[in-house]
Every structure is written in structure tokens, then in C-alpha cells.
Length: 67
Image 1 (cartoon, rainbow, N blue to C red):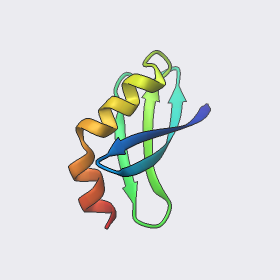
Image 2 (image 1 turned 120 degrees about the vertical axis):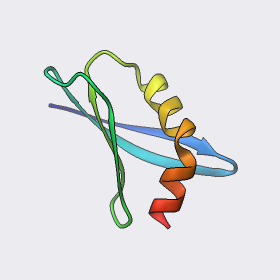
Image 3 (image 1 turned 180 degrees about the vertical axis):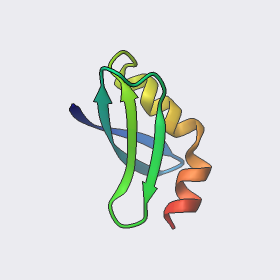
């Protein structure tokens, strides 16, 4: 399993997230923990930039859940 760190911009706030990649996974999942932060589980192929865009596109859910 590969773990990476990324950042997505929401207004003036940076949302840091961690990505756990797996060979067998076919979809991307977003988990929000109010204490530990945002985690993505993703297949190996999507770039970190694409995953960052995904977090930005769902930022209202991430910010509301994390507050």
C-alpha cells in the first residue's frame, strides 16, 4: 500500500489529505475524521492532481463534516 500527502485549496484555506493507494481498488473513497483529517483510498492510476481536484470538487462536504 502506498501513502501520499496532497493539498487542495478551498477559498483561502488549504485542505491537507492523505491518499492510500491499492492495486485492487477500482474506485476512490473520501473519509473525513474531525481529529486526524481527510483520507482518500484510491487505485494506483489517478494522479495526485486529479485526486486534489476531487477533494476540491467535494470541499463543501469535507469542510462541513470536518468542522
